[in-house]
Image 1 (tube, rainbow, N blue to C red):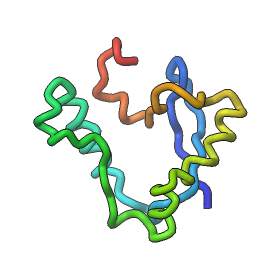
Image 2 (cartoon, helix red, strand yellow; image 1 turned 90 degrees about the vertical axis):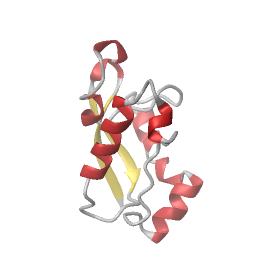
Image 3 (spheres, rainbow, N blue to C red; image 1 turned 45 degrees about the vertical axis):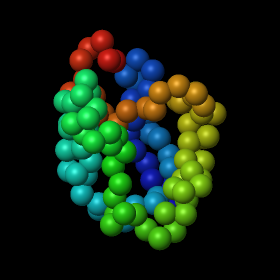
Image 4 (cartoon, helix red, strand yellow; image 1 turned 60 degrees about the horizontal axis):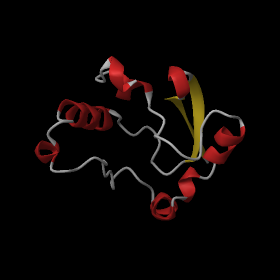
Length: 108
């Protein structure tokens, strides 16, 4: 029902972000990691990534999950993170730790 994922908040502090599970269990994350590397390596050249910055994984998303994502209701449990002070309602998206591997220090 819930998906828990380690994220990096303010000052790179780790916390557990909550979401409703929308993807099939044991989905291969190597595709996501490769997409993050591609986008970060071509950050100054968006034309090389075809302007694509969101990875679509229709094969990995459940039918019910598609509806949750379409309405953004899969993000609703993150209000718990907001109430705990781990996230804000506004601002940049909190990173997954491996997403910061290719970032320069001034990006952090």
